[in-house]
Amino acid sequence: MTKRSGMVLLLRLALAVVLLYAGYTKLRQPWLVFAMSIDAYGLLPEMGVLAVARTLPWIELGLGTLLLAGLWLRVASALTAAILAIFFGIMLLSYGKGMGIDCGCFGVGEALTAKTLARDGLLFAAAVLLTRMAWRRPSTPSL
Image (cartoon, rainbow, N blue to C red; front, side, top):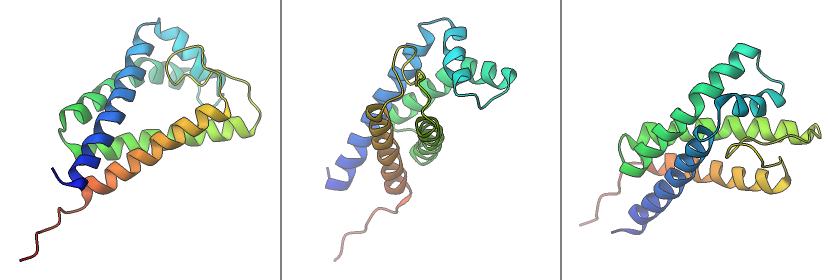
């Protein structure tokens, strides 16, 4: 295993575990509880909140499964990076406004703090790095 393939494996597995856990924790609660966390951000109309609350955990589980299996890595990593960019941007905006809300990252009960921002920023950076590595052509050995 090359250093590059080892890094791809590590990033893939780490992001897969986080996404699978995030989706699982949200599905363990009634979806309306998660909807309240989404609604606290004040960005979506009621129908949007309900749609996101019902679908996001399944999207997280799907992306986590693809990353875990290493299937469609380019698409899965790019979608993961895009979703994490949206999450991180919304969290930064809300934190900057001084909103004392539940982040909703792993279900209910986690306040939006500098610690959650640092964690989600790190996850976003990992997803961007994985995406970059997945789209880069493998180097050919020199003869």
